[in-house]
Image (cartoon, rainbow, N blue to C red; front, side):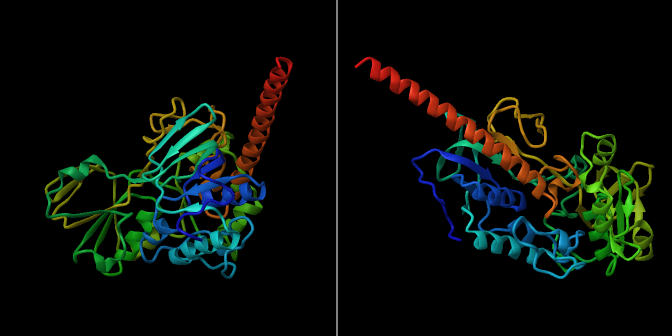
Length: 379
């Protein structure tokens, strides 16, 4: 793969599609679009494929076993019931693009998306692309979120978001407060507890599921029982989509490791924080904010596509003809944002794109034929 690749596409012609985002969602739909023979390009903001995986903390492991981590056309290269770490995932994405010769352009962050008479215009720092259709596959993890309370801490307190956390050795010595009760918060707190005192502040109680049940991986059970196909518009799906599930660990295990649990953090002042139950923690030196991410769609200048930061869609299809989103959390099912499970949504949207392309082509051919007949009758 070269740094800039346009497969079967010249810059002066209208592309059939532009895929914005070269993570697992963008590459999954690229595989389907290529099989349909469409002229498209994938725009990746980073300087290398898989950079968002390589930038995560060193000990990160997937909670989905390898047999469920493959993209369409290529199984993940690891033994079943093993749990890939971040670098093999990044390597897999690079290998995937090379194996299928997918048209990916690196260092191409989309800075503007607007509508045109023929479809859409996508701008990057170095180029402007015209396309009949666009897929926004930038994923759910875009801008790290740190609560406003962090501003109350004095400069001597080291603060990092989990997106910047690498390993315990990279932090100053001494106790650590981890804020955030999702999978990242639990995993980082457990790792840090091996070498120091850790307090973990949790805002909401989350259901906790073991990694393995009765000798089988959790995801074996979820797939066999059809729970990963439960849709967000079902009663069960609506309930499940409001909560994050903690997988592979639990409070008992962390308490045994020495982690002290705290309620939701509500206020910070100097080196002291106050929690929802009125208790306090003094002498803070290090805080890890495992408080999630927020979406950033300010570069999309299309009315009704995004409202108050929320994408308006139905299974990734927006009300704007030719505009789609892929890889969103609970876009259609729990698996919509998971490596290996995004494939179903990618296939569905690729079919929508192909159908829209055929309809548009017939419409253009009809207009051209009508104009040709008109010109002939007037000669």
